[in-house]
Amino acid sequence: MVAPVRWAHAVIWVLVLQNAVVIIMWKATGSDDFARNLLYAKEVIIVGGSIVAILAALREARAGRLPLVMWLVVAFGVLCALWIPISYVNHEGLEQIARGLRSLMFPVLLLAIGTLLIKTLSAAYSLRTTLWWTAVLLGVTAVIERSFIPLPFWLSIGLSHYWIQVRGQAASMLNGGLPWNFYVPLFGSVVRRAFGIMTDPLGLSYYLLLPLGLATAEVWRARATEGRWPWLAVAAAVASAVGIAFSLSRVPIFIAALLTVAGPIVALGLTRDRWRQVAGYVAASAVAFVIVLGVAAVTSPRVGPADLAAQAPIDLGSEGSHQATLARAADIRPLVLGQGLGTAGYLSSKYASSGATIGYENPYLDAAAQVSLLGGLLLIAIVTLSSLELLRVRGPSAIIAIPTGITLGSLALGGFVSGQLEVITSLGVTWLFVGVVLAATADVPAEAPAGALEPAPRRRGRASPAQSRP
Image (cartoon, rainbow, N blue to C red):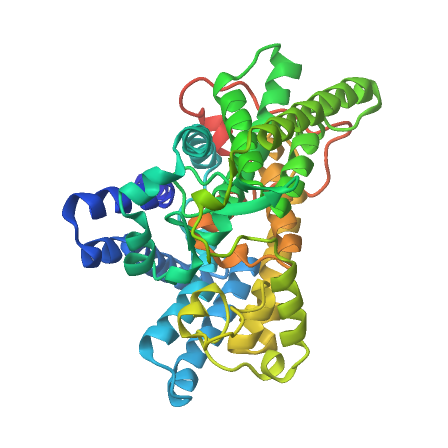
């Protein structure tokens, strides 16, 4: 069990640090090819873990112990595999097929790795701590990057060349060395969006949702039951809220607001003898988050025409993408029958013809467009069942399971207007952690003990053996 847990810690840090490391190495070596190949490090690591997970799934299936969620993952994987030769016969290139397969399968493979290889609650607590440390790092870098690094800096290091030659962005989509969606209109001005050391503002904000939910619940649990402030959790909650708010991403802000006010409820329950205390904590959480949002809006750096490339676009919000999705979804035939791997989804942009939309801004429609309606339904079933399984957990482990379930459930609903569920750089860690907590809490009864959700015991250092059991 030690090796898979270490692997999981490594994956978390790789996904967080990858963009910064690649840019640094690109500047140090001057090689576009080296930097481009370095971007695939995460794929190699995930493929290695996936092979071990597939072997574990075969053993569990033969023994009759494979959970229902994993049977859905197996069905989804078989369906995607069947579409590999179909896509090739349809004259799709091997790279396009590989990109489509990656966007569909990597998230659920991370879920499977967490479920099949990392099964203890002590491992979940350990990974939660790593998530909090990454949140602190990302929140701090978001403030520094957005507030203290001027636009000319990105031009001075030639970052526009990196985006074009290494990341594959079109030159017309850059503004001052940064892509178009790094800016957004706010209160009549164009402002910078924070991205810290992540790939983009959306990657930053979506990643930080899970640490925020876990940290908020733990802060109020420790405060209510032990009269102390758990400083790492406090720092992670504040840093996550700051990173999400500074990114000015609407869907993550709505989900973050839900997680912030849900934290005290998860920690204390809704029993009659505690409702005043819960209401007070909820109000405190809400006020704190509103203050962070206010600070983000007021301090957002304004940029003018002199700071931006004259012809480059500005992110005017996602209304245009949603309208394009609705227009494209009006043609229902591809969504029912499928049209091949790599023909939809965010990784399909490389193969989109001039003026074509990039997928559907919806992972379920993206899956259906590639591998038929059955694929979209299987993906919905996977995230729905996983969310419900986590939300039904009671007892001490609820403090870690329910925030995870609320996060995944909110992301599942947000998927109808956002394609981030299939982006492993922003939500790969969330998929992995969901699998870990699903396995660790699999035997927790559905019915809660009379009264409330029990708080987790205070932990010092490593989790005790008692904490490794639901």
